[in-house]
Length: 385
Ligand code: SF4
Image (cartoon, rainbow, N blue to C red; front, top):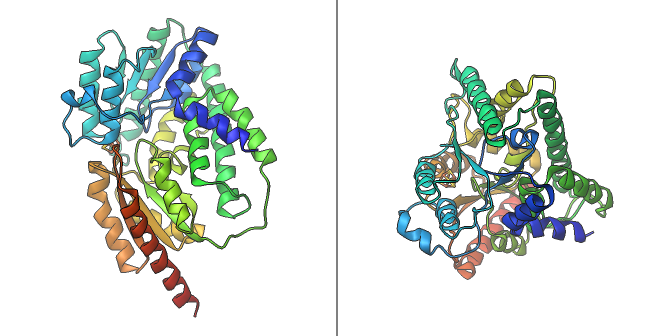
């Protein structure tokens, strides 16, 4: 059974190599997507491979001269990969402006790779504004036209509807795995869970759907529950946390029962409405997914991330919260004090871990996680007494 997560991890760890092989096999374009809101469905309907651009493990070297040190690791890695020629096999990048640092990254890529088409589109950030749906519809219609111009072929609305169905199916499969894990009916490590989601971001969708069918069918089932401490993992916008951090958390006797990571539940929690016309479905998906799972880069009045987390902790049976914050991620940094205050008020244990692209001192981190686990355990014992 481990064969399937391993196969997924291979694509997840080397997405650009996977994309190059796909392109050589199919002769079709590969479109790099920036997180977190561009629908891969549209690129898929245009006959392209959408690949969500990932941070890689290489140290930032030649990219450093182009960027401020206080840009997040994701942005610095994307610039560095651009300058190392890693994106040369892409036919375009779909860019957005969901945080200010990405604007700088787009400028650098344009300057460094003038021949690489950058489809830059602005998605509205105030999602409860009266004009939000109209604006979003307009943006996705614009991307639709830009993709048609790029490939030189019209996108058939029926193909877009088919892509929406396929992507919905893939999200539903991953959600089913999440449900099994939450109930403790399957044992899957956080590292493998990340490989499942990350590979779904970069692999050919039909191939991923087939692998998920096998995984869901063949995973050994177990009696629900586990002796480990159930914990909810939150944060980490835009890219996957390093697997070593997930391993370290689990090695401290913690079981991750749910998360809202972008390379996680945030990526799969919302489907597109198959009864709507494709652009309408994409626009309402964009607005609704950020309404149902608040994102610090979008604004909706009266919808706060901390309220979502408090409810989700209870629903998942988690006894504490671990927040993974990407170093220099401004949207997350601005939002975190609200989360901290809400969890302090309810006396729910929580731990903030700031992650970096560069090597992190894991021994010191392990001591902090062990201490947190002990606090959670003692509180659980006190509550049960
Ligand atoms: S991780 Fe944060 S700072 Fe980095 S690109 Fe995403 S939202 Fe922006």
